[in-house]
Amino acid sequence: MESIANIREAIRECPDDQLETLLATFADDPRAGVQSLVSSGRRRAEAYRKELARTEEMWHYERLYPDREYVGGIDEVGRGPLAGPVVAACVILPKDCRLLYINDSKQLTEKKRDELYDRILEEAVSVGIGVVSHEVIDEINILQATYRAMREAIDMMEIKPDQILVDAVHIPGITIPQRGIIKGDAKSISIAAASIVAKVTRDRMMTEMDARYPGYGFAGNKGYGSAEHIQAIREKGPCEIHRRSFIHSFVEPQD
Image 1: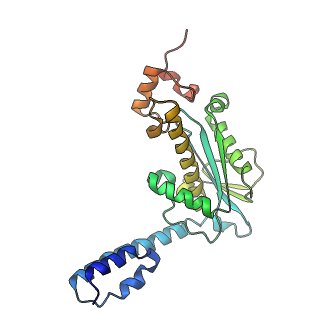
Image 2 (image 1 turned 60 degrees about the vertical axis):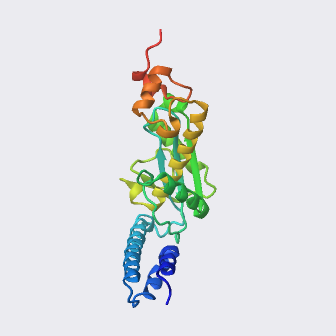
Image 3 (image 1 turned 90 degrees about the horizontal axis):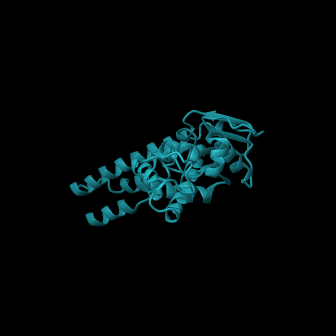
């Protein structure tokens, strides 16, 4: 009879999609320790089934366009920070792609975003990233800069979408059919993928900026207006990548 320690290790190492089959082999084992492991494993298997169903539901909007070969999701990150660029990404996923645990990037841990970022880049049909600098944000305003980043993301794609799903907004200046979805980054797998790519890209940029412009906490706050960041602006003054149109209330007027 296999030891409980070996059974525990086998269940722990078993891939989620094979877990129920493995658990069935221990279902009649009379030992209480084994049955405890089986019960725990079944809870894990049930969580996996629920995640499969949730991820399947996130294909709802993509499947509204069966006649379109390439449905792309687009999203941005960085509209609110006091420093750094706004970044947009557009992602086309294969129709048979199953990216479990994908979600709005804000709902994921940094570790999970990094894991999914790598998988998205590996599995995507096409990915484009658009970056619009703090100077341009100050020049044309954040909304127009966001639209520009989205258009640039599309332009950077080797394979262009023939239908775009976008989080909430309508992108001016493009001819590709588009559909705005309120809270789309939590409802559309393509938009969620784009939100992750944009978020990881911008976060890594801001971490690099932290080394170039120390003292503002960019590695931690990513340019957003934390109390410590605002205090640093007041004490040190702005650095090169601060958005002047966003920080005027924190900076003493110049003579």
